Length: 334
Figure 1 (cartoon, rainbow, N blue to C red):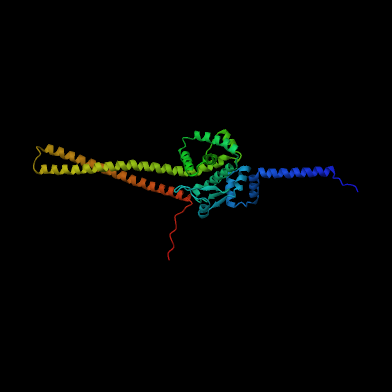
Figure 2: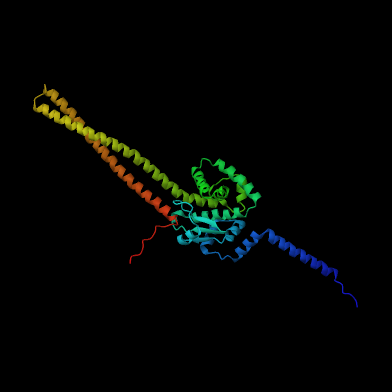
């Protein structure tokens, strides 16, 4: 009975198949996050509102991949608050990256067009940061911190980074990575090249940020200017009114004394009488002019105060529109 022998070709094919299986297994082992992300992207059914946000951001293919790998949601206040708990009272948040998911608060105020897109791009960069190797984080952190030093005059940025240091210790570079990438134009060439991995045109996101930020900036400038005007004008009105009251009191006393002297025949001549009477009349006329001037400034003050209240209301409305925690509803009556 003859022994059966394997053909050399079958042996080679079997060996190559085994090598391929080992290679695939090694790839899956070394790229578990990528494989998981790819499966998530394939299975994610993109909501129309999320698709609209993504199209306005103009992600690169890689940026879009990481964005959809987080299965982003655009939510109203109840759902958003459940997914993104606030870190500090009085500091509303617009989005978060939590448990591998992106959640963005649905801001409906038309004046703040673009705020959802910038928030979504900000959170996408958090997902990128989470997926970085330690070596890449170290390299990018050095670029970010060097850039941050050049922005020392940006007091809003430094105040914001202080907030993150309080509420998210150890995440300074992570937050800086998202902020610089979505809000600051004209970064260093090295950072611009880095961010090109995720945005076809990063300036589109920066422009959206500038667009809605300008609304807040202009209102704050108006409010500050009106407040300064009211403070200056109010102080002037108060001091002048105090002086006016004192001058009126003094003039009244002087007129009473003048009349007493006239009744008692204490003037040595008609010339003296006319001279002193003319001086009293001049003082009275000046007080009338002072009173009219103060009244005009009071009218101006009231108009400016009305403008200040209007601007304050606009600011309050804007702040409420980005605050996912709404006023508590009263208990239903029985």
